[in-house]
Every structure is written in C-alpha cells, then in structure tokens.
Length: 200
Image (tube, rainbow, N blue to C red):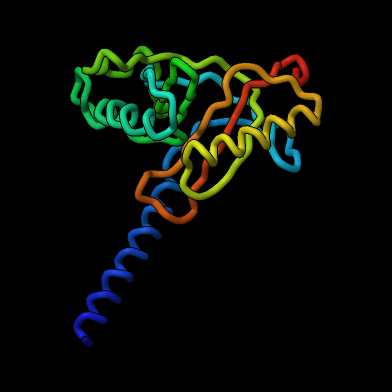
C-alpha cells in the first residue's frame, strides 16, 4: 500500500512538474507580433502587420477535423519535412479558418524567415504565403477549445461588435496558443477582421 502511494505521489509530482515546464516553455515561444489598438469589456482591437505563414487548405468542416489533419502536415514541415531537412522553431498562435466548404490552418513562421529564405515543403499541400496586414477584433478564452466553445465565443464577439457599431468581414477565425498536452494556462482566441478606415 505504501509503495503504491509513493508511486502515485511520484507520478503526480512528475505530471505537475511537466505541466509547469510546458507552461513556462510556451511562454518563451515566439508569438506573432501585434499592436493593441483599443480594449473593450469583452474584446480588444488589434493591428497585425504582415507575416510569413505556412498554410494548408482542407475540406474539413469542424475544429477537430481540421486540427487533426492540418497540424500533422504542418508539424512535419517545421520538424524537417522540407528540401533542406531544416528544423524550424514552433511559434504561436496556430491559425484556423473553418469554413462551410473550405478551411485553412496556418503556422506563423519565426520572424527571421520570409518567403525567400524558408525551405521548400516536401508536402505540396503546404504553401508559403505572406499574410496581409489587418485590424481585427479578438475575444480570449481559456481551457481546451472545441467547436462548441469556439462557436459560443464567436457569438459573444459578434454581438459585442454589433452593439459597438463596428463592421466586420470574412470568417471568424480561431487562434490556438498551446500544445495539446498542456492542461493549465491555456489561451484561445476568436478573431474577425475589421474595416481599417475607422482606425487610420
């Protein structure tokens, strides 16, 4: 009985240490640059400059479908699945645009890379693009994301924008900041593009 308790206690301790390490490591991960323009009660407005992304297009219609297929392809690319067998550092967040017929997932490339110096993906499904600069509205939430929680916060954000008289366009997109095995301190966001004429 004592041995079982010691083993259990040791495993729990190792699990907690692993979660602390994971949380600290994710805080050191390079995060896509943005500027906060305005903070509202339920959301904030940000400006994102253009950046280089690796992206896949998919027929997936749910968060789970897109996440399971897209993440594997993109992870293989940055872990050496390219013409230079080069390791590329993971950044945050992962971008997901889940549409009714076409969806995309993208990894933001580290800031020292651009379209000219990135290695070519071995997988032809992956394209390297430069995103357009944009103003977006953002709502943040914790825990493990799923289609239900994403749709819930999409609705909250949409209603808040309508109340403020802010015009948005395009799909509501999901940003995920944490590795799947991190339990504590998770950060998720739903964003949507805003017309820039109100902020210039």
